[in-house]
Length: 120
Image (cartoon, rainbow, N blue to C red; front, side, top):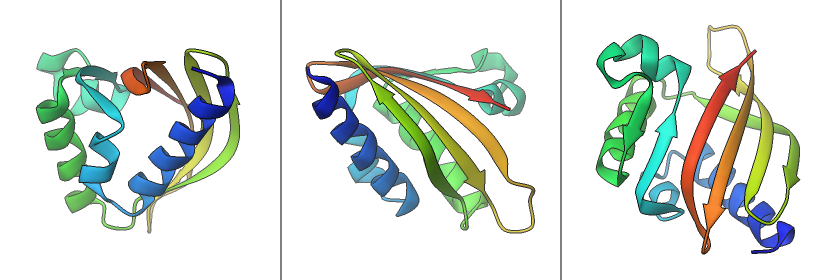
C-alpha cells in the first residue's frame, strides 16, 4: 500500500466515525482486526483494553455511539507510510471537555488489522 492509499483509508475512517455509520466503519477492518483503547481497559477491565474481531469492534462502537450521540472527531494531523497511519484528533462530546487523541492504524492489504488509541 502507498501512503496516499492509507491516508484515504484514514479519511474514510473519520467520515464513517463522525456519521456514526458502523457498517461503513467496520468495512475498513479485517475480520480478525484488533483494537486497543485505554477507555476500553477502564470500562471493561477483563479485556485488558483489547478487543478482537469485527463482532467485538461492532459491540464496542455501537455502545459508544448510543451512549455518546454527539461524539465527534476533528482531525488535526495525519501521517502515513506504507503500512500505517498516525492520526491526531480532538474528541468532542457535548458537555464534556475536549480530549486530544492519537491513534495508529496498522493496514495490510487495504484493511485495518490493528488500531491503538492514546489519550492526552
